[in-house]
Image 1 (cartoon, rainbow, N blue to C red):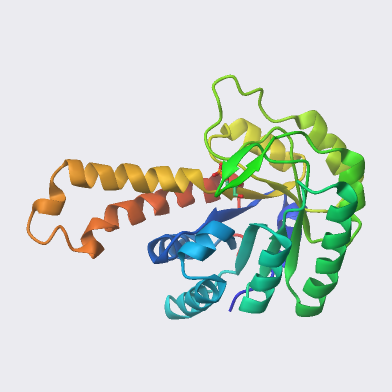
Image 2: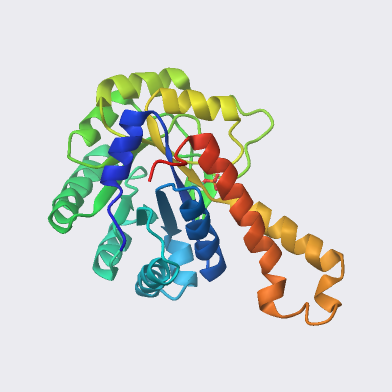
Length: 287
Ligand code: 13P
C-alpha cells in the first residue's frame, strides 16, 4: 500500500537523516528503486514529474503500476508515490489518480497566488490523507521543461507558506537540477539556517541532489533537510551501464538483444546509485 510521506519525514527530521526521493521513468526504474529500498530497510519516495507521467501513459497508469508492484514484489517498507514539480492541474489529476503525495510548485507564481493555490490544495490533501510539498524560491536549471532561475528563497516567505499546513517545504538555497557548473558557488547554508529557524519542525526538501558533495549533503541534513531528490544521477548510471553493454558487443552475443538482458545492466546500475544515496542520507534501517 502506498503511504503519505508525512510520517516518514517527521521521523527523518526528528532522527536527523533524510529520505530519498528517486524519480521514476518506467517499470525498470521503479522495480530497481523499490527492491533497493526494501533491501536497505529504508522508506522511499518515488518521484514522478509531469513529463515522466505523460511518458508512462498518464498518472493513472503510474499509480496502478506502482501500487501493484509494491504488492507483487512484497515491499514492506513505506513507499510514497509523489508528484514532482506539479502544476495546479497536475496536482489535482494526481490526487484523483491515487498518488499518496503531491508537490505543488507555485514558485514561479507571484507569492500571493502561490499561497492561495497552496492553501486550497492543503485542504484537499488533508481530507484525503495525502502529503503536500510546497516550494518557495526556485531551483535552478531545467527538469522536464520546468526551468528555474535558482534564486534563494526568502525565509519570511518560507515561514508564511510553511504555516499553511503543508507537510514539507522545498526552498531554493542555490541548488540546481542536473549537472552543477564548475563555477557553482555551493549551497547557501546561511539561507538554509535562516529558513530552518523560521520554519521549526517543518521537514525541508533539497532538490537537485545529483552531484552535491557528500559533506554538503550531511551539513544540509544537520540544518533540517529531511528529503533529498535525486533524478539525473540514476539516469547517468543507467546510460553508462547500457552504453558499456552495447559497446562491448554484448547485445550481439547469443540472445543479448533480449530487452530483459539489454536493460539489466542499467537496472543494476540504478540499484547501486540508490544504495549509495540511501547510505549517505542515513535512511537505511529506518523502515
Ligand atoms: P537532479 O536531477 O539534479 O538529481 O534533481 C532531481 C530533483 O530535484 C527532482 O525534483
